[in-house]
Image (cartoon, rainbow, N blue to C red; front, top):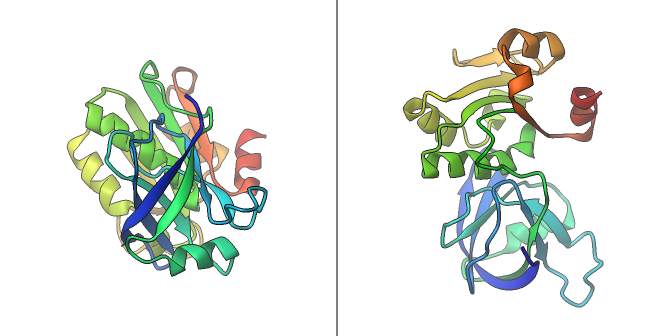
Length: 218
């Protein structure tokens, strides 16, 4: 796929957690991408190398929608401030698609080890699998500091409720969870060995904070 620049307008904001928000944009023409790829939001057109305002973000939606969505944990960064300041129908520029860490329909068994906002490309992949009614066997290990910071839990619960091939382990690390489907634990080797009976048959994806990725791939 060729990387192109698109004009897009903001059409919806969705609060996912107290600190995480999704923004949906309607591009001037359809953006083709593969589940797991990412885009670049352009806020400083005059300086393409401005890494504070022109940032890479994963698609947090499946291909095929008339909109594209990005999701971010909002902070005090210049990008977060720019995103927070956007009003409905405001225009942005998007460069896409980027990335090779993607889902392929030939993958029959996959597993995700995810920390925090690293969940965004997972949404793209799982939503695609659900929409296409694929029989892919999915294990999702999803870690957050607190239960309140589990982004997209409503969507995951709905998908797993109607798809027996999707099994989710919600894990929290800083406080005892209030609901029974969350586990007070970290994603570590003993836990994974206990839960994954067929590691040699699965394609693994690891998204999250650099320290977590380093531990998981070490």
